[in-house]
Length: 247
Image 1: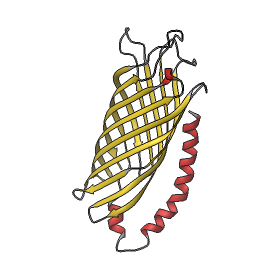
Image 2: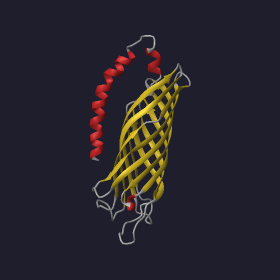
Image 3: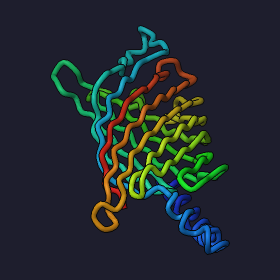
Image 4: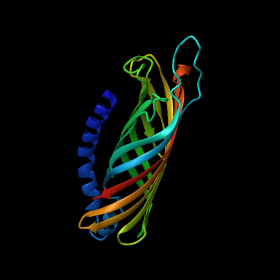
C-alpha cells in the first residue's frame, strides 16, 4: 500500500506540471481549439462487476503447507477515471462455507496519451503510463502472515489509444495497453517480474444532463505474477463490465 500512496503523490506532481502545458497547447491556435477540446475523453466515476480467474501456474511443495489460492469468481468494485489518472478497487469475499478465499485488488495509474494522428472525428494516440497495483488473496488462516498472496506491483505501459466521435455527444474509446514491471511481496520474501495486458472499450454518452453523461464499459485483462518463488506464481485473467457517470 506504500507504493499506492507514493504514486498518489507522484500523480499530484505530474498533474501540477502538465496542467500549464496543456493550457499552452490549447492556446496555440484559436481555430483548432474547439476540435481539440471535443476530442478529449470525459472524466468518469462508477461501479463494475468483474469475473476473474486466479490460477496457479507455479508449484506448491508438499512440505510447505501453502494453500492453493486458485479461484474462479466474481468481484465488485468502484473506479474513477480522468484523462490523466485512473483508480479502481475491487473486492471478493467467500460465498460459501466450502471456500475460504478473499481477494482484493487496488490499482492506481498515471496516464499520458501522446497523439500521433487526429482528424475532425477521431484521434489516435500512444497511451504512455505508469501504474501500481496491490493484489491480496488470502484465507482466514493465512491472513496477515507471510503465506498470504500480497503483491505490490509497478508497471510501465504503452500501446494504442483510439477515440472516435460518433455523434456530437457520443464517443467510442478503445485502449490496448501492454504493461511490464516487477512485483514484490509485502513481507519481502518473494518477488519477480510481472506482465499485464489490458483492453478497454468505452461508449460515452456525454452531456445528457448539463455536464453529466453516462458510460458503458468493458475491460479484459491478463496479469502474470512471475515470482522467483514458484509457490507465488499466479495468473489473473478477468472480464469487467462497468457503468459510470461522465463529467
